[in-house]
Amino acid sequence: MILLVTFIFTVCFGTAYCCLADPPGAKALALKAAATSMPVILALYGVLSRGGRVNWLIFLGALLCMTADVLLELYFIAGATAFGLAHICFIMAFAMDGGADWITILIFILIYVTIIGVFYRDIPGLSKLKIPAFLYMAVLSIMASMGITVGIVRGGISGILAAAGGIFFVCSDCILGFRLIHKKKEKIYRYAVMTLYYGAVYLIAACGVI
Image (cartoon, rainbow, N blue to C red; front, side):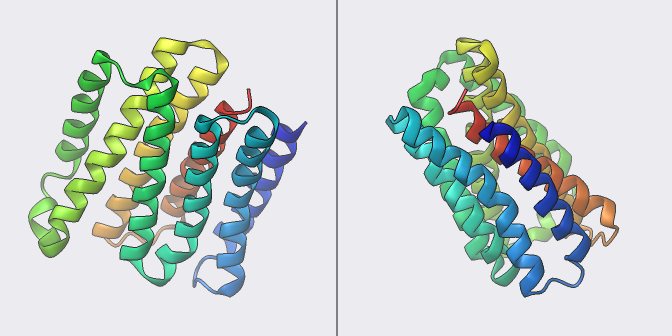
């Protein structure tokens, strides 16, 4: 039941945010955070019902994502740092859940090289943000590769959710990066980024419940 309720409210709050996000205001930020609060509640349910360090780390990661949602609109570097910390929490959770395996290295290389390949023409123009961008891409790739490894090693619905959550995060951040670098204003980009992002956080939170 909680899976369905949190999913519905995530969709409702997320859709409302996308409709009000241009220009961003206090109401839009509240809706943005409210949408992410649903996966946070779902992850908290996982902690209370099952306990364990894995669920605590997933909860903390989701909570950091919700914090980053607001910070990203106010101070980009602080928001990106919060997202980096969230990914570290997810990495630790996946590592404890079977996500650290030899195949993880191969998946990491594939994801990291693919991301760099997508943005290789834009990297020289990042200037002082070049090193933080490479670090963030590395952390994101590690998280996603570990999530996919959990899916391969563990299997089942929980493993599939972990893998899908990692993949959704990579796709969301790549679209966001493209949108910011090329200053794309079309709403379709926002809808794509937020749909994939909310999906990613929700799926990772759900893998600790199922």
